[in-house]
Image 1 (tube, rainbow, N blue to C red):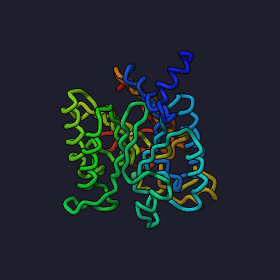
Image 2: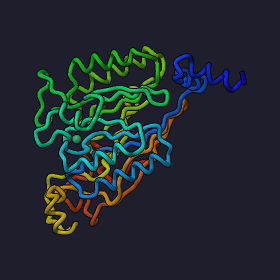
Image 3: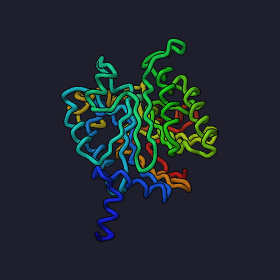
Length: 320
Ligand SMILES: [Fe+2]
């Protein structure tokens, strides 16, 4: 038997499945590359497929281990099936996070999860030696009522998070649509989540929680809370305002088909983040855009920042 043949059998075992291949990861600490987009809002902007395609192409070139969409992707309706097909036909694995607008139109979370083909409202997987944990920030809590869209994590999901962290000792990336760093209008009981993540770090005796990724707020910031980095990934597409503009930034027929366009500051190119985590650190490769028609916060008559974070058509390059 040749050496190569013997090695092949050692790696594949009696079942013929390559069970032992991840052993390489034990010898060499794992690195992880992610393409990350948030808040595409296909139902608000007319060019969501092109914005998604830009992330997919960048993820391919970056040789990403997975592509993440952080929620507010689209409503689960027939008109959006082409977008869903584009997403599923793109680079894999795809990691989906449930956003509040993904249920717009009266759909239940379970209906959206089934339509998207997600493994569940919250779920976990292993990618390139990292545990990726996806939380569902759209639950209700009787003890923390909120106005508007539900934005809590229930007790059963908190228990699931703790149990999932106890499955192994892998480095962890947590994803959730709404902010978990304590951001105003984020997950209302985010402190409960942070306590569990901080406990996992303490138990591991190292910064095992490598990164928390969120969207929803359409902002661009990195918050460090008790040694855990919380990266807010700006929207692919726009910043929302409550002020309607007179219009004219898009052709009249487009503005007629997409009425919310008059209430958003549209980015003239898609924004997303390419994230690399290495055993020694990590980096975020961002992108810069401008506002379509030069229509930014000043032109819309809104404050230039929200809760201390500047409103900007940018995903900033950062070291992690
Ligand atoms: Fe959202």
